[in-house]
Image (cartoon, helix red, strand yellow):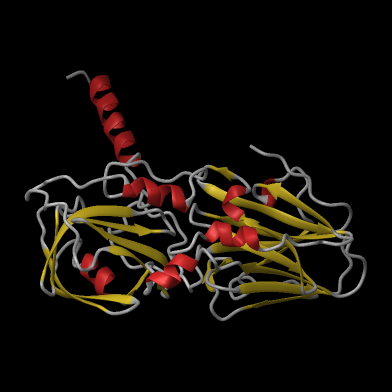
Length: 365
């Protein structure tokens, strides 16, 4: 074979390998959710899919005692990075949803959009799972116990995905998305577990913030690359880079240090900077991977902005933007970023910026 043909073939194989799907892709052959797709869209799309009979026939489409939709909030750290080779079913912080429906199991990780589908049967207190595209040859055996509001699964034997499927499904009880009484369900006045409600609809019910006399400008992109960037940067993780003189950075204990950034997640996780220096404008830089979610910005304790940081901008696999506050006047001020937490998506805060005159001028790529 001529040398240039060999080189062309090698380059083609290398590019194909680099284009392999990331963890946000499903275990089944379906596209990963883009910024235009909401978690609700992805979940509804999963509900329309059915398993393939890999090594066992599909079970009869009959209801079982565990049929229903369930959710759980994993309280461990979420996956805030884009992972090319993370194992399927790996437990991660945030909302997980699980559905048993007439012999079809569906599972979905809201933070990254990962999902899978399988067949199942129930006999007495035994649950058998098979036809999972993650591990088509493996059969998982569990015992189950369903109480008023929860479903608990215990592993008997399951080697799927280096035993991660069993760890995930049995790690904590699953809360039922079905009301425990018909009258409660008819009125819809009952406490729905996290993951069972429409998070974006709940956020929309909250009145938008009123910035008052302040001017709030949302700039798409990374402020470090703006035509006119901030004059001073204060890194979020002062453990790695100390704040300049005159600035104090504090963060909640639950926030996660990551390089020069801090990752916020959960409810009201926060980071703030305080200074008495005079600036014409100051801002918060949100910049992270696709899982990044809803946040809000407070100025001197008053909410002035709230939004989905992933929806501000995305380019080259990075999502977010710079939320700038101007018109604040002299004196000591505190600028604070908080995770809204209702969607349990991580929010990466890279830095705070300060402008001496005017403000930043952004340029999109």
